[in-house]
Amino acid sequence: MSAWRVERPGPIATRPLRRVTLPIPEPADDEVLIRVRACAVCRTDLHLAEGDLPPHRPGTVPGHEVVGTVERLGAGVSDPVVGDRVGVAWLRRTCGTCRYCRRGAENLCPGSRYTGWDADGGYAEFCVAPAAYVYRLPDGYADDEVAPLLCAGIIGYRALRRCELPPGGRLGVYGFGGSGHLAAQVAIAEGATVHVVTRSRAARELALSLGAASASADGPPPEPLDAAILFAPVGTLVPPALAALDRGGTLAIAGIHLTDIPPLHYAEHLFQERRLCSVTANTREDGRQFLDLARRHRLRVSVTGYPLAEADTALADLAAERFRGAAVLHSTTA
Ligand SMILES: [Zn+2]
Ligand SMILES: [Zn+2]
Picture (cartoon, rainbow, N blue to C red):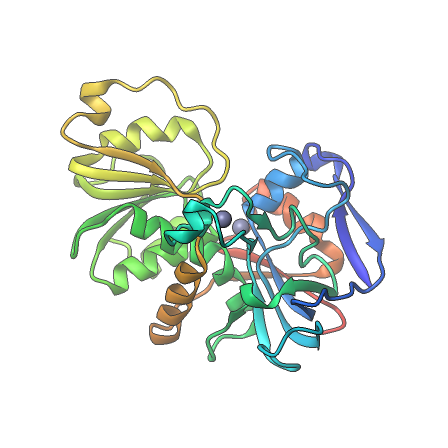
């Protein structure tokens, strides 16, 4: 099969992804083999390709927003079944026995494994995944529309829950790419007023068309915020985003990687019970809740398609913010 892997992490201009031919993987007893139909491109893939996140194993195939059909079952698998459309996401496995897993916080499991980091992902024609960690997908979305829901959507949803936006509250969204444009729609559907801050003019236009109350290139938003989510991996945005919070507001940082945060000033950025929190992956329950929400509220998913053969171009375009919404790779054999 055709696939891409991270040969040697480095700046995207050095083309760290290499196109290779690999054997079709064999599912373990508790895994399924999936024929990949679409795989969305996440900023985490860029962090892995560029080495911001150190490789967990050499030559791993990235891609953790995978939509495909079950082609073959491992010996111990009865659900899903062959032919089912399923999704594979970032959280690949957890131990199930540690203190975090036992209290429903499997996203914090120290033994967790990740698709496209610890095991080969979806920048390929086929992949394998543990049956207990694949998702059933909502009908009514094409393969390329549902793919970005699997990380951009689920993580955005967890970030929205972590920032504890009160009902009818005012939400700031900093950075408006794959994740931001989905989280904003969920918030708006739930009655929030959403203010978007993003450098990209195309993203600002998209934000307004999706119902954002304002969209600006830089802050502060036109009114104090009850909560905010930082999607852009830019630490210098943390102080202004905290300063834009109203009393008691929370800023959630959605990314897995962030550039350094400048010194904070207690009175200006934190006093009056403002809070700063991170978002670490997601639980399967977050994924199920979000996909169920996507089933009930038809989300508009902004997609820019690329053939699988152009995965490196898609990553370079993500680095340069050359498209809006989410990039999605299409397998040529699909
Ligand atoms: Zn665990
Ligand atoms: Zn991701």
